Image (tube, rainbow, N blue to C red):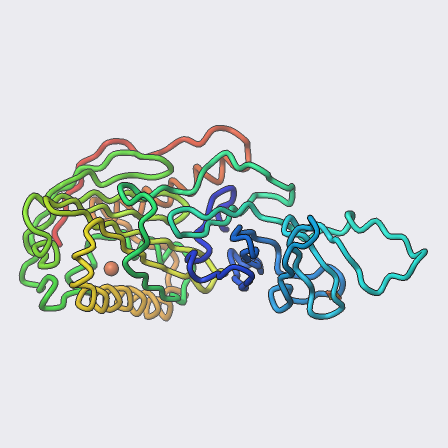
Amino acid sequence: MFLRNLWYFAAPGESVRPGSMRHKTLLGEPILIGRTHQGEVFAIRDVCPHRGMLLSAGKLLKSHNGQASEVECPYHGWRYRTDGACSHIPSLVDGQEFELERIRVRCYPCREQQHNIWVYMPADERVIEQPSEDPPVIPEIGDRRPAFRESEVFHCEIDHAIVGLMDPAHGPFVHGIWWWRPKFSIHEKEKAFSPSHLGFTMRAHEPSRNSFLYRILGRDVSTEIRFQLPGVRIEHVRAARASVIGLTTVVAIDDTKTEVTQTFYWTQPLFNIVKPIFRPMARAFLRQDRDIVDLQQKALPHMKKQILIDDADTPAKWYYRLKENWTTSVDTGEPFVNPVTDAVLRWRS
Ligand code: FES
Ligand SMILES: [Fe+2]
């Protein structure tokens, strides 16, 4: 099942212009993500409760005379405020009084932060004004715009997409391209991990000498990778001249499709020169991850249980335990217990 009471990456900020709306399926739920003409983002269930219709196919009406912005259904013109309350039914005549406020479309907490739109997916139908958590903050970049983004739909359920991205042993086999890491360069690695908010962090270390990409960043390169539930990975590469930060978000569209989006930021505008090289590389990488996981779907229905080995699959084991503990905490109301402890993992890749 999908994890609840967490923020999910819903859309790039730039993909929702003022006065526009878009449809998105998150965790199997149809969601309208909109931005008022004043620039505020909001998220409501993308189903008109009258007779069922995608509200995102309707119009977003400008606020006027102190009236808030409204979403107008394309079928019979019922209108909803951005908090989901019904505000107008055009077919009503005088005397047909109706308590409009009793009709509501579910409203989701929605926040725009660092050019990313996050939607909070609550565990139940109750209206949540202020979630206890905040969406993840990307370090060092402040309000800088992303350098670029790449997004792919993996045809699998979310766990395989996440585990496939965090697993260190697939690199030389799936991404073994000459300019990255040829297979013959496989060698032993040792990395220190610590528990961190809703997940774990591969502590700052000097990246493998065999990865060409890191070399172009100059001297004193260190990289730190943080993972947190539900599927957020932040890779922070610091170098003498600048930093590059990669945000990977893995979001379940439903139980057979998962969207993986990689957003890259850098603190040095000069790096834009290498974008025409870097971007196709990032895209190729993401597609390789997608293709291997898509292929895996043909075998998975024929096996009962995965074999996860130490230490290469330890992050995967942590992921499953984090999920379990989060689910228990949502179900019982008890505080979440992070199952990860400080560890040094060793593997060859
Ligand atoms: S279905 Fe939306 S107004 Fe009728
Ligand atoms: Fe990969």
